[in-house]
Amino acid sequence: MAKGNNTLLIFDFDNTITNGHMHNTFSRLSKSDFVSTQNNVVTDTDIKDFLKNTGGIKNEERLKSTLQFALSGGIEVNIASYTGYPNAVRRVAENHLGLSKEQADSVSVFGGFPVDYDTQLQELDVREQQSQVGKNLHICEAIVNYKNNHNGRLPKTVMLVDDSVGNIKRINEFIESMSKREEWLEKNGLSIEEIQKIKFEGARVPKEDKNVGYLERVQEFVNANLVQEPIYENLKKEEPIYQNLQDIQRLLSETVPKEPIYQNNENRPPLPPKKRKSSDGMVADGENKKQILRTCRHPKHKQTQHAQNVMQ
Image 1 (spheres, one colour):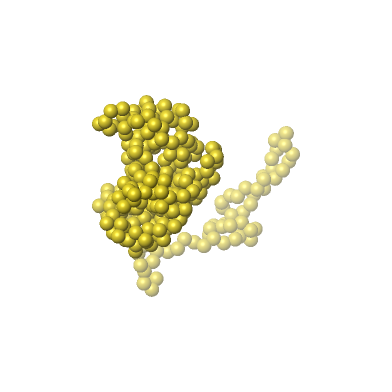
Image 2 (cartoon, rainbow, N blue to C red):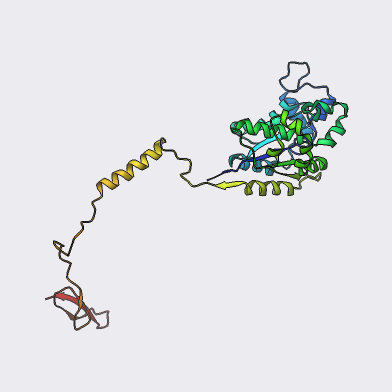
């Protein structure tokens, strides 16, 4: 049995999970996010039409199997996207990635833009924000979320899967880049010392359709961060199966007779007689045996002699 070893796997959404750009599509239509109280909200039909018109899920079957394998192995999966439609992104995760309800519910979505995480970036336009910090502020939020959900424990490794060269560059420089934002880290529940304990890496999604090399790298990342557990590691003494096992062991120790201990060969039961070989090579147990030769006289058979042992 294997489980994830304190690992956080983060996927971009537009042009990474999907072949199209959902934020741009709905933004041009002046749509509000799914289940929004505003007018002209995104619906499930809108999402289906978007997927149908833009080529659907990128490398769908391979992506689904990779996500399912990671989640079933205990790897924590998040989505970090420059989007104003995080609820619509979640609907895709729930309904179009082949995940169980439990698996889909475990996927956290971090949307918005860098300025939504750091107001000091508001003087920059969106492109400059993205160029300066990439997805690193989204990733910090994901790490804090992981930390809160795991009693203060940090992930040991974080991978970002993204189609943006800039975002991959920024995560590969994560510690160096975020160490310059010490005050921001502290305000948001992290420290330089904590992020220095984490290994960060990126896997870039190529523009070419049907190129699954990045998913092979993700699979290698997942495999490397699964640890094998002993089969009884999670059994606790209060669990019925553990109690039953102990009861059986105790019962066996009480009912199986122990071999008596003899001292100086006193009262030891006699051993069975030793086997010996007779003069004709036959094995005998203290009794005389001899060989009698019988002749087969069946008309269809040649006359042969069969040996038969008889007791005397």
